[in-house]
Length: 632
Image (cartoon, rainbow, N blue to C red; front, side, top):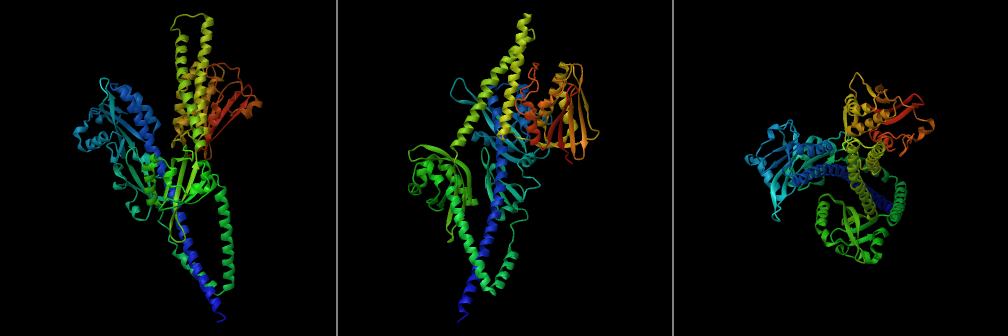
């Protein structure tokens, strides 16, 4: 009897140990599922963003055709070319008035498609009829392409306004081919560093009813994390598991059980460990309670079945004007406007499938009846009795919306209210300075030249300000790709050749004998090279030359732009890459700069994992250089 309490105590601790091990196993599994879910959410967002950005480009062409239904192929090409340049995924765009392809860009490689009548091709005609019936942009595929590879086809009908009636006349349909391989790569699906295996189903945007077109179909049967990629019409369902499958923790469990049996013989030590565990648990609970109440973002715990609030922190109910007691007793639809019912249903379905929802935006209704925007996300948990609960993060995004709106209004004002009239002014001044109006007095011509130079400078400033704003807000997109450096330098030199001729400057390029490859955004590198070359031309002595030299240093390639100008004063060196910095503001030549070009160039090169700098000696000119890592 003396040892009976010890035996009971040891037995209790042993059982508790097994229970703790079970909790640990569940926690490891839950953390792994959360990690997989987070990675899948990023892929889903990138996939949706790429598809929808391509859709918006195609919709822009629809608007253009609806206003110019009888445009020529040349005009169609002028409108289509910028779309393909701004999207690496788009392979071609075809327009079919009366369902016969008459317009195509690019034509090269797609000649056989011109004149194709959809009505005579049943498979394509069914997809076309579906898009017309829905009157929406519909993404079909993937399908095998005649040109090789696979692609998705985005189709959208075009209607022309009838001036004689309120009805719109059907004009035809636009079809754009999205390269599936490039889409997968740009969305991160083929990233070698990805720690999850992904499968996608929903061919022809049929969601979980469509066939699997990416990854291994077996993934859908391995208890995967699911996510829904929303298309302009329809959806795809993504499934993900860790690479190699879900971790089996049976070995760890066996070891833990052996340890518990061993500890059974040392009951006093085990009791001490358990006591310390309890104390630590209480400390963590106290810490979490403090963080819960002090969090600047709203946090709520709700009953899964009824939606009733169980607990909330101060940050969630303060913006509403309710007290804590009033807020907890509110029903869900006393806080949420009825027009969000459809959206709420979608989030509920997502939560039932993946035990998570959001993030998504909606509005809350305050006590006084006014509304404010919130961003919600959450996950399903279980209490100690197995009851399902929902933890939710509710962020008041009123201020964020206000700031975004102000930025958007500013950019819109700059783009439309300044750039458009400036373009007209510059064009008009260009005509007058070229002598179209006849001989003008020298003084008048001098004033017009000054006005023309300054109008162009204002245009450059507006463009640079927009680039600076995009860089500051991380909205500038970079399309990183591996390419040959020599080719990029040759293009930069060629595009600046006519500009150099205006100043009687010779451009000399000294390229490498081998084709070195770098990982860069081609458009951004060309922007930087053009800025540095044009600067070198502007500040070189007329009749001299500018050298563009490429050298190797281990795993780094260096591009030098060497001018024959006056050099940069030493006291100005530390300011050269600052915004609105100009070493010599007295220079009044055309394109003398906005003071933003070098600052923008530095940020662009650093975004591409490179380095930019300069060397200068007064009276001997300056050398600006770019250093980029070599891609093997």
